[in-house]
Amino acid sequence: MKGVLLRMPSRLRLVTGLLAALGFAVLIAGGSTFRAEPQPRSRAFLIVRSDLGIHYGKTEVDCPQGLEMTVEEAFLASKTPEERERLLRPENAKEYGNGWKNDFITGPGGENVCNNPKSFLKDPLHPLYRGVKGKAAYGMNLDGTSDGRATPNSCTHEKFVSEAGEPAVDNQLYRAVGCAKNVRGLGPPLAPVRIDPFLVEIRGVDDPKNDAQIEVGIYSSEDTPLQGPDGQMMANQTLTVTKNARWRATVEGRIVDGQVTTGVIEDLQLRHVLPTWGLLGQNYAFEFHRARLRLSLQADGTLTGQLAAYRPIDNIFTVGRCCKGTASTANTDCASEHKTLAAMADGYPDPETGQCTMISSATNLTGVPVFIAAATGEISSRR
Image (cartoon, rainbow, N blue to C red; front, side):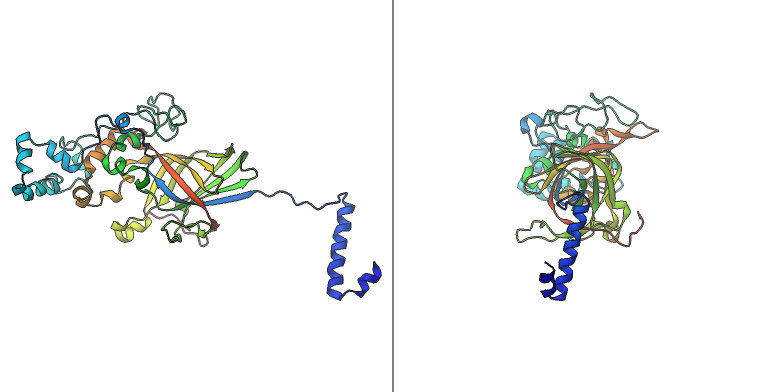
């Protein structure tokens, strides 16, 4: 062996000697094979879809009285049969259009139903939505009760049952708007995405099927995700975590039978750009309070799940309430919508009035695998 080594080039003799020394060290340690210790793994996902958590059951069950009235329908309902017939004649089209697209959505002070829906809380022409009557919904038990009774942190409300049969589900946001045409009428394939893309990272995964202790990070990213030729956001790209600590959160969790569940995040905020607000809209965020995640790691590498939380009622449809156009073009009665959210709110009672200020919700999530780059140059929270 010594003769063989001497005939080798000097660099090769050095490498061979090092390998031999390493093997000798392993033998001294009492082992015949080198084994690296198993390392915890992380998985990161870009959430490419986050819809409103609408349960699309049978419409006749969930909305037995039909879908909620649009602005135009509410305008016509406020008229006598004779007046409706007159307004709908072709020669009266201009009067009819001005009636529901302007007069009906404008208050006595010039405010409109979408810029200032609170001004119409007592206006009978903009009634409460009837709401969902079905028993099934997405979501989780957020108040800790089995019957929806009032607690120091919640108001009395009805409960739902999940599709999997889980009882005592809280999702008053779905109850409030689940029969609205601009929500339910679009159907599952077209239901609007409500939150800007964000990142979910599952850290410390020793076993993707069962792991008693993991950590889950939820982060906004100020990057613009790459899209493929089909317009869908691409998997396996690298994205940067936001520098703003306000738009990041971490929480402990666990994996049971491939399903990730987390503890409670008291205050989760995710960046959402409001184009109609100009520069001010760059620092806006959707808020989720006492939030919890339930996620499933799919065999194809994707992620599905839910984000359940209480949401401030003024923080949900802000983009849609930009102007009169929401009412006159999208045909959404923001006044009725806001009135219903306020009436059905079930979380965070006001200490003076007892009226709840937030509403329980469930957001369905879909994510694709990505790589995450850590934030540098962190900036403080700004409002």
